[in-house]
Image (tube, rainbow, N blue to C red; front, side):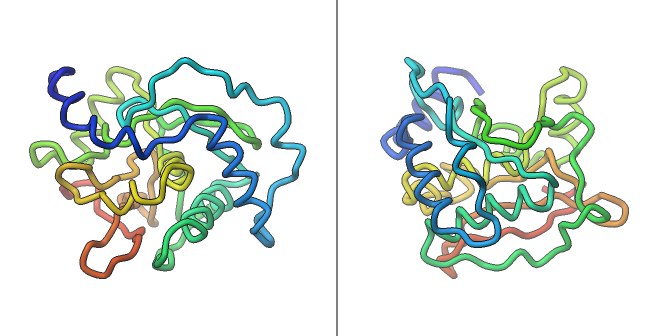
Length: 210
């Protein structure tokens, strides 16, 4: 997509994005409301929250919590969504180590809170009927890193209304192409706001599906 046209298309969502300071402060508050998944208070120390970056859904500075396992990391991000949205469905598929893994060109992190820059609309967006595999292959060829649970956590740290504006057209739903699920790892988690049921959902799509 042409950069100028892209800027115009997504400019309306900038008001729902938060600064790094607001996001880290919000994460700390949400973390205090958790039970078993709560991370240590010491993880919040020493983060650089000074930035001149202009936040956009295409280029968002945010924080991402990584726990010891991929399962715990996704569960933590999903718990953040539960704490910030009025209605959230349960994860209906297996996310243990035998059923969920990172794609080969996904970002890998050590446990902790990481400052990251991601797009909420690239690679997993619905563009011209692209399948998930057609998104992954060019990214692999260009050595572009794909993201997965990062985008779930990122939405939780912005104004909650942003996720509720996700309609799959103007603001794309999220195909978490950095994750692979299933015995053959041919499924991809699909994260979206259900306008009909008024709830947040995390379901599966086949890699060859649109």
